[in-house]
Amino acid sequence: MTNFAGQGSRGARGLPDQRRRNCSAIHSSLYGEIPLDFLALGECHPCPYLPDLTAREEYFFAGDFPSELYHDFMDHGFRRSGFVFYRPVCRDCRECRPIRVPVELFHATKAMRRVFRKNVDLEVTVSRPRFSEEKFRAYSAYLAFQHGRDHPDSTDGMEDSLYGSPARTVEFEYRLGERLVCASIADICSRSLSSVYVYFDPEFSSYSFALCGSLG
Image (cartoon, rainbow, N blue to C red):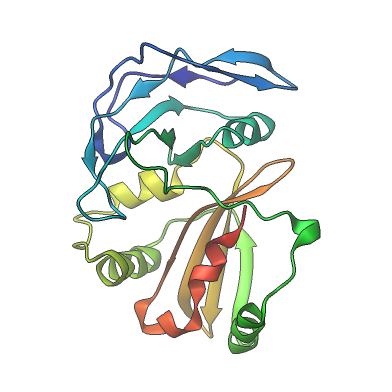
């Protein structure tokens, strides 16, 4: 059962809920026509990617989300953070564009092959997402290194935004010996594998773990 909510508790970035006046619809081959009258419109906030610009999203909450339906929403630009599904609706910018790679047409570049050879000693395991203090430390260091942000004050925000999921989700753990050097969280749909978030230990930034986020 899929539960949609366009209002209630605060979501990603603490955006207050506001009803949209003009709503479109999504057509799903399995679920039919879905009017988007449940969407909420967040307030403008500083863009986390481009300086001197503002960003805005429309979004909704879902307690459970079938994989087939999630793919249909991704076709219309939606992504998720925890239990919040969102897509950008910035007034003057369209630079946020999800990257989709058709698997049957994919060919590794020379740069990708070099990265693969460099990471040949890593052990990669795939399992259900599991939060831990070890991952919190790596995530905190990553935020400071990659985004210049202060470390989170508690584990709650990380658990909610990264390890809370209404979809079918897996986690890739990359280890060098016993040490966690990177984690990649991805949603599994019937037609796609969608990257949710990748973070890594800054001491191993030369390993080019950003390529782990190219799933989708």
